Amino acid sequence: MKKACDEMAHKDTFRGYGPYEGYEFLRNAIVAHDYQARGVNIAADEIFVSDGAKSDVAHFQELFSADARVALQDPVYPVYLDTNVMAGRSGAFANGQFAHVIYLPCTAENNFAPALPKEHADIVYLCSPNNPTGSVLTRAQLQTWVDWALEHKAIILFDSAYEAFITQPDLPHSIYEIAGAEKCAVEFRSFSKTAGFTGTRCAYCVVPKALKLTDGAGNTYSANDLWMRHQSTKFNGVSYPVQRGAEAFFSAEGQAQTRKAIDGYLANAKVILRALDQAGLMAYGGQNAPYIWLKTPQGVTSWDFFDKMLNGLQIVGTPGSGFGLSGEGYFRLTAFNSPEQTQKAAARIAAGLK
Image 1 (cartoon, one colour):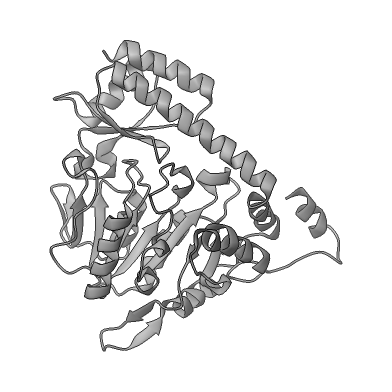
Image 2: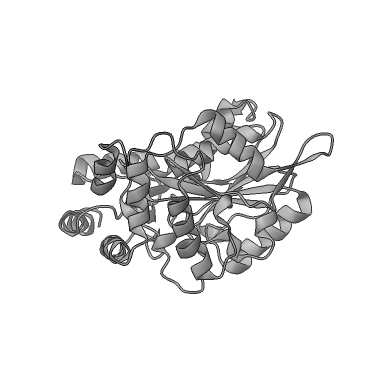
């Protein structure tokens, strides 16, 4: 990134507006490392570099009509729901949910895996590894979703921002490892949680050329073309120095450094899980994701547990109810911290929550 900034200081190497979809050097690196290395056939012109997966998942719904039906996991990353509410698709709000949104409960009783919708949905948001539950959809589960989407002409918006945390070799990192997914799914990925780009901002989404969208009259359109039109209208691209920094992530040194960081976070997760077990609390996640999703004690709400953690132990987490109705009675902790701080927090949990 410093080298790229130096280039920008000289007329001969200065770069102005870059390609809307991202520089070819970065898109080629993404294709080679994240897809071809896993036997997935994705082309560079199906990659769109952006300033964050949050932006992409928030904006992609703009390609759809106001009456499109949306299905999403519950609990869920709030951006999926909130952007559709802003777009006017949600209907009236009552008893903690919106009338026109299809909620797919994910609780301990179903191993945090959403069931297929019982009514028609045009758009389905899936997040795996999941934020907040830390669960991961298996290959068989994803195949079921892809088959359903193809049959019902639905589009899956697949958020795999945490795929680098997957440790089990049999779990898919990309939905495109599943047969037929290129005809029904868009995938979102981020450099934030993988390579620490939270303040730097860089991500990408994959929009396969095989993916078609249909209007009310039955006409079909290329989703790839529509997304290119959207991005070229509303976005001027990620800066050249940031994209060079993202390219460096794919180097041997970049891979070694980020792998060490991710392994450190997963080690933190083990420390937290062990402390929660010592405290007698049931917890999930942490093996293939940086999040730990714990069940609050019987009769204790998510916000009451938050107060106990904050005021009693000086530990901050996120009340599960903030992610949806099915999150009530749960609480999210994160492994994103130093080993020293994690050990300190774990000691407080083990001693203070018994």
